[in-house]
Image 1 (cartoon, helix red, strand yellow):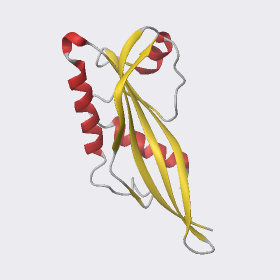
Image 2 (cartoon, rainbow, N blue to C red):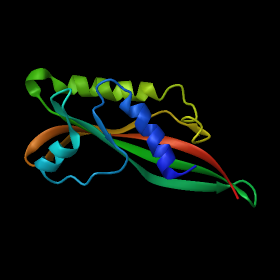
Image 3 (cartoon, rainbow, N blue to C red):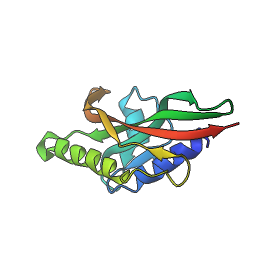
Length: 149
C-alpha cells in the first residue's frame, strides 16, 4: 500500500477521536505563533488543538527473493493550548490516552497494512512557539506491511 493511503487511515482514526481538533497528513513547519494558530486553531474548542502525521522511518526484512516485510514508524505530533487555570495538562493527557485507545484493537487500518502495533507515547511535554507555551506530544504507531514484487 502507499504511504498516503496509510497516513489517510491513521488520520481518519485520529480525527474520529472526540476533541482531537485539526489533523494534517504531513508535518507542518511551524516557527511562529501565527502559523501555529493558522494550522491548529480548532474553532469548535476555541483553542489550539491539532495533529500532524508523518512517517519517520521504515525497515524492510527480506522474506524470500520477491517478498519483504516492512515495518514503518508513523509519528502523530500533537499541539494543544496550555492554560494553567484550566489544568489543561489533564485534558491533554486524557486526549493522548483516547487516541491510543482509538487504535485498539490493533487491526489492519482498513486493509491498508498487515497489522499495526500499540500506540507509544515517545514524548509528552511542552513546546514554546512565538513566546507561547503549548502542550506537545509525539505518539508513534508502528505499521507492518507485506510487500511482494
